[in-house]
Structure formats: C-alpha cells, structure tokens
Length: 196
Image (tube, rainbow, N blue to C red):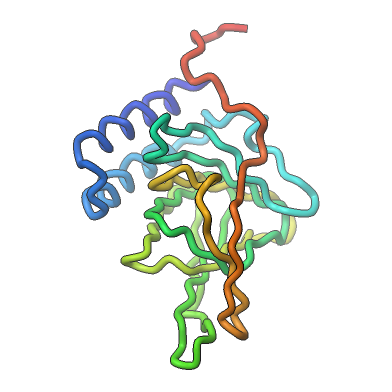
C-alpha cells in the first residue's frame, strides 16, 4: 500500500480529532489534504480502480472505525453517471484521472429540482466540496464517453452506510437508498512496504 495514502489517512484522523468535526474547518483543511493526494497518480491500488461496463463503482479505501469519515475511490466507466442524489454529510471530491461533470440542483418553488447553473468540470488535481449547508443535491457524470475517470471522495461519515436520497428532477420526489461499496475488503494500509 502507498505511503501517500497512509499519510493522508493519518492526517485526516488528526484533522477530525483537532477540529471536532466542525464543518467549516474540516472542509477548508480536508480540501488541502485531498488536493495533495490527487496531485499524484501513483498510489491508488489497481483493484480499487477497476470499472464496471454498466455502472460506476464505489470502492472504500478507508473507513474511520467510529464512522466519522470515509475515503472512497469512484470509478466511472465511459459515459456513466449517478442519479440526482444527496449526501446528508459534508464531502470533499478530488479528481485523480480523467474528468467528471458535477451538476448541482436546487429545489424550485413548485418542488421540482432544476439544474443550478452550468455543470462544473473537474479535471485532475481539481477539488470540490458538498454539504447540506453549501449545496448537497447534485448529479455526477464521467465527462468522457471513451475512457475511465476516477475521483477520490472524502465524506463526513461512512457514506456506504448512510441513508440518503435519489431524486426525480421532474417531480422532486425522493427515494431512500444506501449505496454500499463495490469492494468486499478494504486495502491494508499498514502493510510493510514491498510486502508480498
């Protein structure tokens, strides 16, 4: 396992302890940590970068034992996208490979969801934040129809276990879901370097 990933996980744990999960402090400082992580593309294990031909994959890289945060690799096959959804917790998204389009939505007076401005394209090294206080409903898609894209997401909770919602933009109706993860096992961050 990569020292870069291990060092980021250790720094995230220290950040959570130091800030007491105060959202503004977490977002500002975690944004820097994730930017540092995605500035290099030499650390993500191959097994956490495998696409599926029909749907995007969500690999848990690290889950805090107290469910205070989780670090996840999202792998987008060509043209794949999420439904319109929320998170209910803060999140920091860093682009590692390829590009993704982040389209925020807002609720209109009639209850429907409307795109809020043009979608923002994230390219390698770019970082964005979400949370219920700054905007939490969006749709994410691979910006490419011919290649895989990978983004690294940090969430303020165990995102694979959190009850969230997907939305029908035309009606504003929501449906509860729990995303889970694509991997059956998490990587061993503490393995000795060059250990077989």
